[in-house]
Image (cartoon, rainbow, N blue to C red; front, top):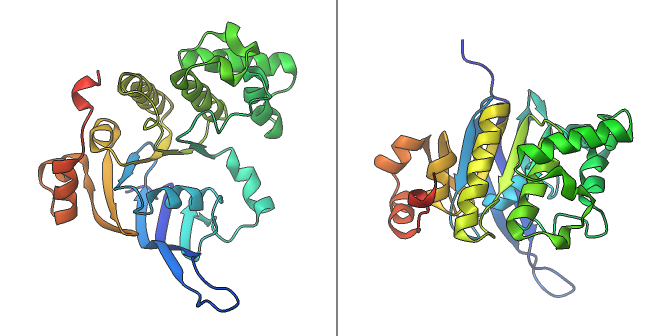
Length: 268
């Protein structure tokens, strides 16, 4: 019997008002315009498309960073979209996001230890500072960082190291769903491959489900189980990785495959 997906998105709309005022007519940008997709337990679904197609808005809507206009998003059977901030807060442990800009997502005034300890205490996952420090050290090692550097501040690290710290902050909570929004696009190509391999290893080892948002089909090909192609606020094609890359059906998918640079050859 097929398992119920961990996430079921049904006819999701996220629209933004772009006009309107005392004398101006109100207009709307339909950033996400009626999309549906499922993610199963332990699966990586990639949402791919050009900049401005609405894919990042999907991730921000699912994590309550943007309000939805209509539709449903069932996480383990419960619709998370109509939840208030207080109602959604306990789910933030289970639904975590890796952001594009690691520096912007880290508080410059907190040490790495403080950054990683904060979510542990918020969600009641550490009994003491000693307990938290042990969990932090273990997670730092998982992302390829020396635990001895946890007393340092974000500005003391490279972009790739900061993204590893951002990934550590997500994985230390042992989430059920990770939404990675352009998680390697801000990094140099050589560092992209290293961080991408890290994300893939952590996902496989933990079995966490993932929505991987990217404009780069080379990256998507490396990490995905299934791929959803997004164009102008809508999903135009969905299929397993092999189908999308070897037998694309939609003209837009064919255009992406022919025009987007890939880093596949550089990824081990």
